[in-house]
Length: 125
Image (tube, rainbow, N blue to C red; front, side, top):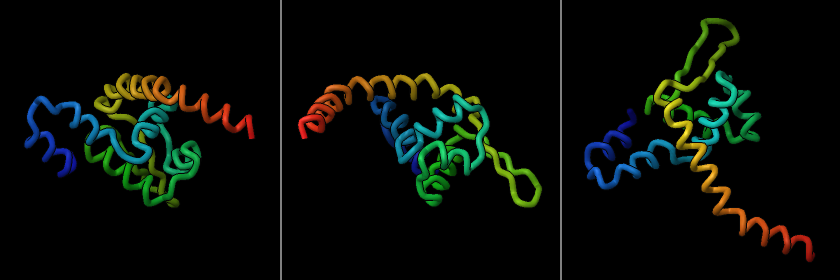
């Protein structure tokens, strides 16, 4: 577990357990990474980058490390040249899949009226 996550778990009251979820899942690309791994099973770094439409390597590396440190991902390094690294969900990561799906559903509901108004404005131009 990352130091930041451990601090939130230990210092915040149980009333704020939703904040623990946000601390672990919040961040650039994290829910998308979890969704892709839930759909594909195992992916390599480059595959994740392409599927995510090319976040910077630095950002993707950081998010993968945080998810691994928080126990949601398993990183497997194969001893070969060039190096081969694969990512897959841990059992804990798999348990987060329904939550990520529900966040996506809610996000779609929230965004729908705004998307429609943006689409209508573009059509007028």
